[in-house]
Image 1: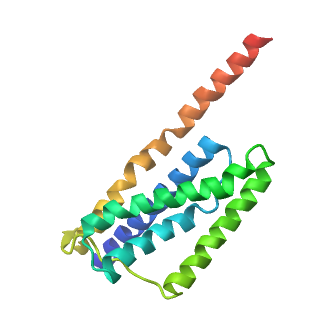
Image 2 (image 1 turned 135 degrees about the vertical axis):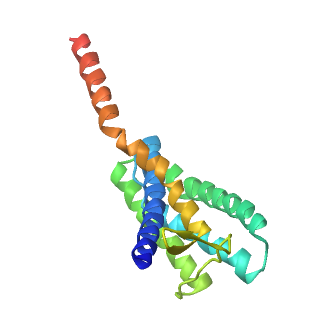
Length: 176
């Protein structure tokens, strides 16, 4: 039974991370109108920068958590200025293809910089708790709780979408 609970906790953690990534993609798509296929590569870049600071340069957890967002912000600004700004007012397909190219460039740069071996960041919390008879790390429990608000938001999506479509049909009817 403990093994099943551990697998469920692992699945909740992984699913929560996927939900947060998907939420970021949806927010970006709604803000810009274009799907950014380099989003996952940017998240991978953040993980490798964190690994570089924490494991290879032995910085503390707090400096790593402060430096990584700043680095990714800078990379995001560079990508926007080099990859997206010149393509404004172009066909959206052109922008989507440029996101593929930028993602490939980030992935290639990571291969050159860190190699192809998988890396693991150490857990910020190094103790475990007993969850229904299964040993689970505190970071896994907290990560799975991060995804719950986004899951709750998507549980409300059908009523919100219905309300928006009814408002849209009402406004189009008033134009006639």
